[in-house]
Length: 67
Figure 1 (tube, one colour):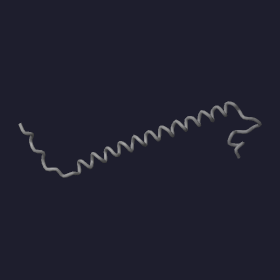
Figure 2 (spheres, helix red, strand yellow):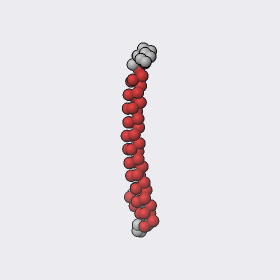
Figure 3 (tube, one colour):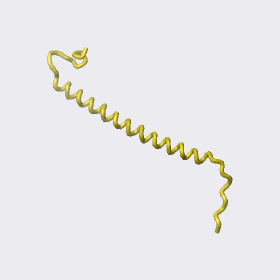
């Protein structure tokens, strides 16, 4: 099965190995970017939650500033 996945025909094709390494690196890059974006999204969601909490407090009309 592994031989079929690698396109085994009697030896490893250097182009295939190079492409496989490139794709593995791309997957790692995308996984790290996904982690960064998820962390940023969590931070933004927490900030939005904090803002909506402040807006949900019922405060009467603001008083004018003293002059």
